[in-house]
Image (tube, rainbow over all chains, first blue to last red; front, side, top):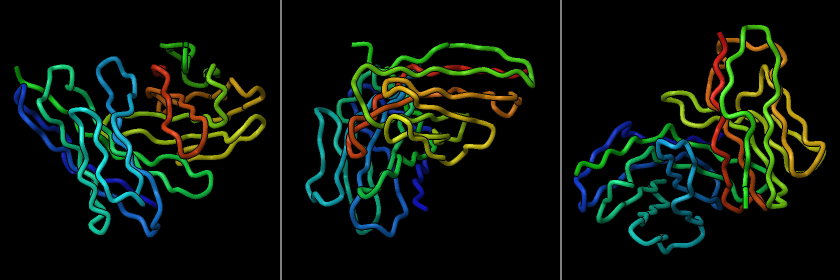
Length: 115
Length: 112
């Protein structure tokens, strides 16, 4: 079974600075999807960014970008120009490309943004 | 658009009581999911459905039942609530298995 590991339970960053959240995963598959979700205090789960394993180019969404290292099974999230609204729990998730397999989530990293 | 709506948002139960959580989506999504979120555990999949009339077990299905009689609704039932089922429950849906999931706002359930 696939597993997702987020080794940083908590992180903090100064406003306007850059922070990187780590995620590693374990799989024997070659085709899959990776996601970062944000959960602010409102409890909503918001998709931040998505990466397809067969694409070598790292996904970017405005201030959010990933460093996808397929061989190392690493999928880190970089947040540039951090804003107070970025404070939230961040979850890394994995999904196989084949079949009806659902998402597997990591345990999350709580990000604090310091003004 | 309402998206994914969960009912109720909060509930307190006594051990042994039963209840049903309702998830409704108005996006015509095929796939629907029920997760529970506990401190330090992330989200864990309870049950999911790949279409109307279908259900499948997830990672932590024990003590729960589900039904998907209508495409837009996915019901999560607790037949005999236990304190270990105190959690925040999230429903999600997506159009296709490769599409991002849309989440509801969660239901906080406390069992005394």
